Length: 414
Image (cartoon, rainbow, N blue to C red):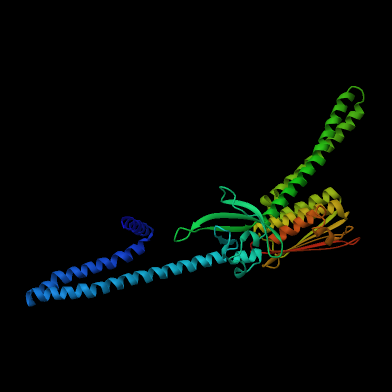
């Protein structure tokens, strides 16, 4: 008996502390009103009855009032509080369910045996199973993975298998949640599809590897060769001054070429021209530099009013132009390049890059079966699609290549 009383006391105290200020007022105000009403009845009405009709009538009315109307008032008060509490709880549960269902992440609850008890729309979208198919199933068997619970870990990464047998890299956040009885703990999992993040990380790694190769195969080798030539010049300094002069001129040209390459690599890492001068000036500089380095003509045209675009769109367009001109210089053997930037449509921007080079098989290079070839093309396409745009390329061997990019303005990446 004493233990039950102490437990109820703890529950009442804990429940009172969890109540909001509005709920505390809602509970206390009626009690104060009843106390005030009862006090007025006793001090005024009952005194008047006692003096008018005597003590027996006074007691009879009190017994009738407190014995009949008191419990009735108390029952009505408790019922009102209960129904109001239940309505508030149902509203909160509906709000929480709406938040859970609207989440793009998979939010799943499982019991201690790993059976699924809840499965939101995000889980349906990611894994392809409807809620009625997933409930009461084993999570690990359904997703064909040794998900497990890493010791002392609330977040980890693993790979799960969707209904269509796709392997999906995911990040799992886990938290333990006891039910109202406190005797059957549930585990709530928030599972986030990190396929896009992994793809971007891989793209960054590939870009870093490409830059490292450029530094190793270009700058490092040329500087090493320049060092050898300097040693030769030192040996020839007293005997063959003409050859020393030739070697020094060659070293000077090598160093100048390396400075150009380093500038190109720095621009690949961070488009400083874009930040300082804006998209139009930056693209014009790329065109002039390409024409100078490759002895080729570049025609740049702007259609529509020149205006600032969202920085993410400008960065994507700049990178596409940069990579496209780099590809033309390396592979196309083109004599002429046409750049057209169309800003006449307020809803989107159009970029067209065309050359008169030797052309290639674009579809083969853009497929995943060619992991190393066409890497620049795939990076360009990914940059455009990240901004919700379209990337199209048309190339015919011996007849040149045309690249067309459309990016909507004001549209966040998908």
